[in-house]
Structures are given as structure tokens and as C-alpha cells.
Amino acid sequence: MIPDQLSQEERSLLLQLARQELNRAVRQEPRSPLDLSALPPRLQEPGATFVTLTIKGELRGCIGALEAYQPLAEDVKEHAMAAALQDYRFPPVKPDELLYINIEISRLTPAKSFEYQTPEDLLKGLRPGVDGVVLRYGGRRATFLPQVWEKIPDPGSFLSHLCQKMGAAPDLWEQKKLDVLIYQVEEFHE
Image (cartoon, rainbow, N blue to C red; front, side, top):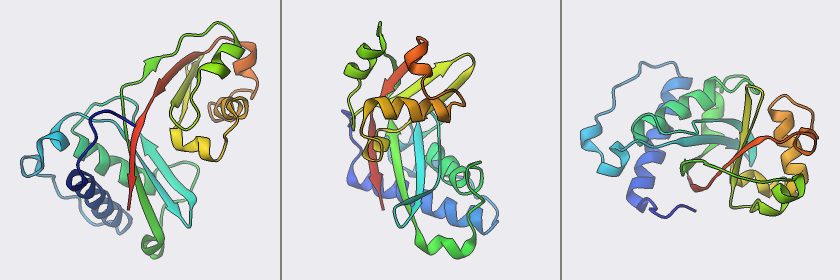
């Protein structure tokens, strides 16, 4: 949960933009420019988001950014398209799947460094269901959104799965001191 929550209207507009971009990208229709001046001011401000696509509760694609580098509305559009077509874990979304896809948007707070001394400190300091976690080590990086805690509620398992996502051994977090960052999200969906 982040302190400056979007209004219901702002959330609805972002979900509408994500849906339009998802449909356009999957149907290979030309991209239309976004008129930022027609949107509420907060959607014009820089924002970092992840867009998650699911079908019947199962992940179908998820792509996003950890740092804000473009207007929030553009970020949502870009990641809706990328989640549908560029998530390496899945084949591109097909037009006949569009009707079944549910869109979830996670708006991120800036990530903050998480200081710890031992693996036990790390386990005790994480807040399941609240903190998104970024692990960095040796040029590799991976993140899990706070929603992933629903599927992996045990902090040790959570960190092991995140190490594997990073392409490392599952017990790397117990063997080496990793760079750990945490963030929170404002999550909303269709």
C-alpha cells in the first residue's frame, strides 16, 4: 500500500489504457499516440508499474519497471503491450485469449535498500504480503511483487524462488550477502 493512492477515476483510466493497448498490440494494430494533456495530472507524472495478465487466476504475462522513467500512463501502456508479447516465459498472447485475460496494475513506490547482517535478519525483516523484494548479485537482478507472497508465503521459500528467478542457486541468499531492495505497491485490477 502506498500513501498517495490514485482515485477510482485514475485507476479506471489506467485499466482502460492497459486494455486498449493490450487489444491493439495482440491484434497488431497501429499504435496511437497518447494525449497526456487530456489525462489527470497524476497520470502525467513519472511512475513505475508492473502490468500482470492472468487467465482464470493463472499468470499469462507480467512485465514492468522498478524505476519511474516516463509518465505513469505511458508506463502502463508500454507494460501492457510487453506483458502480452514479450514475457519470455510465455508465448505471445493470441487474439482468441483477449476475452479471458484479466489485467492487474501494480504502481510501485521507489525501491529502498534493505540493510541486514545475517540470513536470519533478512528473514525476520521482510514483511510478507507488504514488501516487494529485489535481489541483486553479480550483475543479476530479479524481483517479486508483494502479491507473490500469496503463492509463496514462507520467507525462506520466497527468497529461494527469487534466487532461482535471478538464475542463481536457490540457497544463494543463505550463502552470500545480496543487495536487497524493498518496495510497496498500490495494486488494482479489472
